[in-house]
Image (cartoon, rainbow, N blue to C red; front, side, top):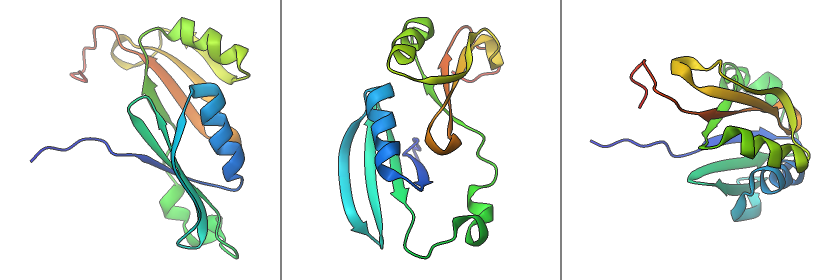
Length: 136
C-alpha cells in the first residue's frame, strides 16, 4: 500500500481573505471554488504540489464549541523550499507577516521561518539540510 499526503483543511471566518493570502504570498492557484458545498463556501488552492482545502463557516455553526477536538493540536503546517532566504525576501515584499525570520533552528539541521497567516494560521517554511532523524 502506498500513502501520500493529500491536503490540509482550514476552516476560516473569511474565506476570501484566506484565498487571497495564499494567492498573494505563496503564488497559489485556486483550482476549485464553490459558494455552497455542504452549506458553506469552499475553495481548494494549489501551492506547489500541496493542496489547501479552505472552508468558510456555515450559517449558525459554532466551531469553537462544536469541534474543539477537531481543531486542537495543529500548531502549524510547513512548505519545503529550496531557497528560504530568497523566498522570505519575496514574501516580505508581498506583505507577509513573519513571526520568525529564517534561522538554522529546525529539526535535523533545517533552516526554518514562520509566517502568520489570516486568522492566526501559522505556516512554516523549511529548507532541508543533511537531516539526521531519517526524515528524508
